[in-house]
Image 1 (cartoon, rainbow, N blue to C red):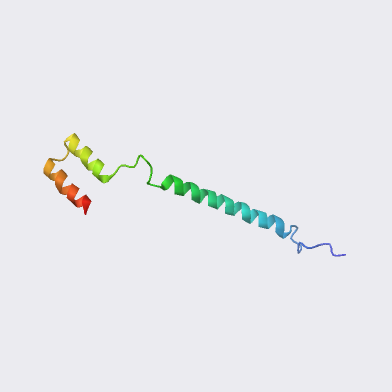
Image 2 (cartoon, helix red, strand yellow):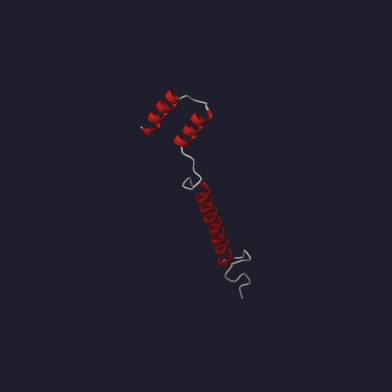
Amino acid sequence: MDTYGMTGGWGMGIGPLFMLVIVIAVIALTVMLIKAIIGSNTGPNKITALEILEERFARGEIDEAELQNRRKELER
């Protein structure tokens, strides 16, 4: 009889190797999904450039003329 069986002499068949590939694929997809969720800028706490500009005006960092000029630039 053949002592190697269907494993080709490597000591393990294709089943465990296939399972390892599936586990790695699941982990990779999970990481990509988490990055996509965390990296999205569509959340409710997203601050727009116009809001930052208005905050700078409110703090007195820029005057009204600068506010209007930059607002026009942002609207383009």
